[in-house]
Length: 300
Image (cartoon, rainbow, N blue to C red; front, side, top):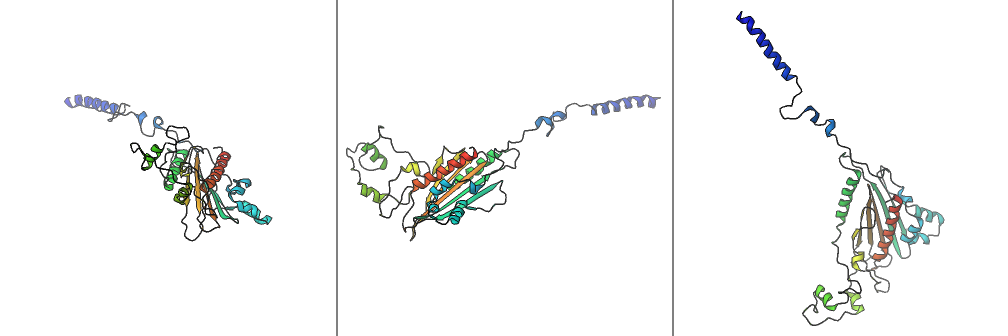
């Protein structure tokens, strides 16, 4: 009798345990089923794709009138077929025209040999949490860092400003006598002495056949620098090769990003005259004009 009375109680106890195990109550860590990782409540939207899905045909992206300006030797080509081929350029090798395209031109003239290279790169992110634009921004930052642009320099005072034309102010900044408290001013060097002291290695210098230097722009306006009027971000680089016994080749690079496309322009010129150097400002102006045209054609 005692055995029979015990069995129903044990069965009831086991049933209670089973019922508790089947309930949907909180788990040991306090998290409910609806908060499980990967559930609908934690899903995040994929990063947005870039604005551009294709790239233009690089060799057809530059106008003939622009090539005439950048490559003056084209207009000196008398043979029609050769001139047509010069305008066409040569496409750079690529394995995916939706991701990277480019074109090169090389033309000789009586005064110089000019090279032009235009490159388009469409950046695509393979990380669902990173947008194409963000990936392109990172790629462009690496490209700009590799250019190793110098730190910006202060612009010269404008005419009419309190410091413009002040001998003591300019002498103090340069470390020459005539600063505050000196009571004296230093006479300005003659134009011929200034020309002789100018460094031909700096952007803007240009040696002419006569040996005299052409007018130079403000160094702050022609030094390698970032640009704020082109695409989403841009920079300009300007380098001058060593002289040796040949003419000095100058390379001007303008690169800009618009959305997920990065455009790079490399414009090189080597004068025919030994020891001569191309004019920095003139080459920069031409390269920037082309960059603005390409940005417009992309809608950037």
